[in-house]
Image 1 (tube, rainbow, N blue to C red):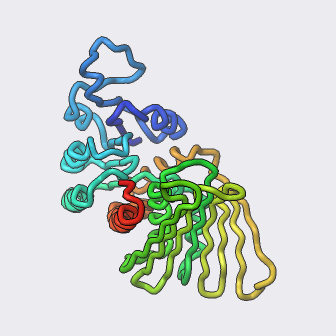
Image 2 (image 1 turned 90 degrees about the vertical axis):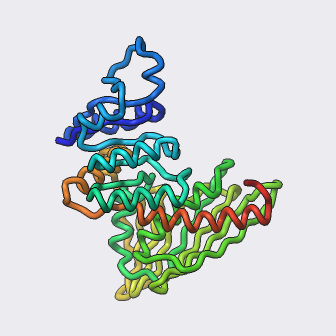
Length: 299
């Protein structure tokens, strides 16, 4: 049983619902400054009056907001040798991530960074099939107006996990077809082990799509993320693809992330999305931002 609390009332409900799917978690309550301003507010959970009180009751802490507003509290939790689940670090500065890394190593704590896909059975099976990738291609077409950099960040984190190597070169191209802001983004990552990663993201297309194709030694693996399917071609039967559908064990995506976090805390598995992974992702995203400033002045 893992005693766990949440920092940040905003976005806390999905985490509470996810913990209800996992009997291994014991939810202790929430700390949020807004609850201190309205002490008469009725809540269905324990509202801690200080962050220190929450730390004393918990073995682990979830930070439900992917903003660096709570970065000092993340540091404090690690100093208390608590295990930490951060829902996202898209708005963290590189120096803030490096500070977390230093504290984590000193405290020997587990720090897991949330990601919508890395903890899924679909992606983990893809990773098992891609032990020595030569070339990885990620393709996204969205029929809406998403934040292209945010989408690219998620793809870069996955590429780093698949390549199992550091990035030594990032090349970026952005294009506009229908508007004054970028409609298409192309990113190329050159890894230290020789793997090449390419990301293609388009705001407009004939139909929505999201796929990962990896060319490996003796195999090609193509994952259709939208339809949860993996197709594989092996050297012994290059004309006969093998296709399998991958489910999620009946758990919601967020519950899958928390389950992975729990296994890591208990020492039973490697961390799927680590601070090191997000630091490398952050550095690649800085290059994307620089290119987009030069071309479009949108930041």
